[in-house]
Image 1: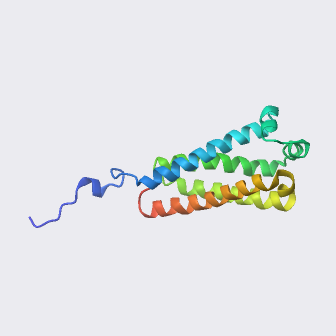
Image 2: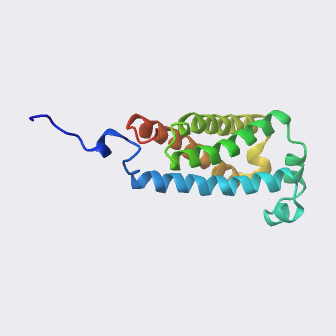
Image 3: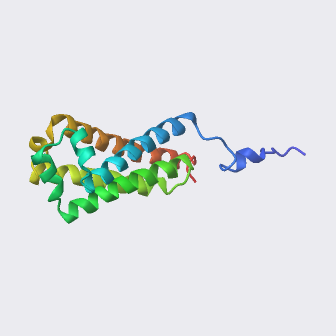
Length: 156
């Protein structure tokens, strides 16, 4: 009986524990996109109390009142994809990878188009613009991270 016997936990990645950093990064991204979803809903519905609390004046409100359909689709994909990819990663689903890619591409496309054609920096200001660029960087990093976790069989 010289056979090596592997424990059942080593055979099945489903039984192994998720690394601590998956929880940290996944919950961080989930919190980020929960906040983004709140911003999305209140901005798209032009909630006057929320817009006033953001310090938005007539130029900013006009920016979102006259928001092009295609950009709205990208924004929706970004927010919905962000929630779904973070939840999928926490649940250790390999679907987190394409969802994270969709999220990152939607965010990058939205940033490029709004900076190039909508005067985003001038209308929304540097603080909001830099924050959104940071979200784009984090979205790319999360896609890369999810790919790494899939290649290590953490995501199944």
